[in-house]
Image (cartoon, rainbow, N blue to C red):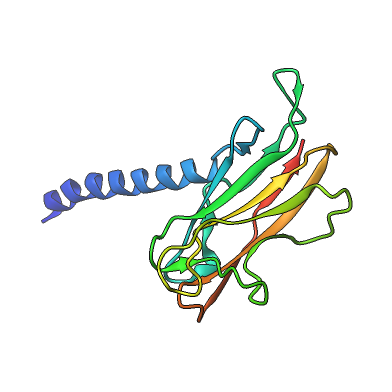
Length: 166
């Protein structure tokens, strides 16, 4: 029985090491660098057990002031909920879904550009929300929140990543 234990331990250790390296690689993910060359895509990965524990694929988003020697301004940023049928943004303004700064936008750096097209008849059927980052003031940190719902509108979800004007 002791010999069998030694055969199992290396396998269990290998599984544990693989799991730990996967977690470490997610934690060490570099920030997303957004430029005006195209939409800055950020995916929302919903935690089905507790949607308030949902994450974005880039915990930090940075807007460099210059790219290839040119000003990096007016950057379209698009957040997309990956789960197709369970969650979405409610476009009705009274619900409060979307992407919002947690503090004031003293320098008017962000402009709401709308929700993506909906699919189906559910009240919260929009999968994307868009903002335009002006990026005209450097050295600013913007904490923001993302609010969305189950597609039927019965449960609200709230997460809070960070954006930086470098």
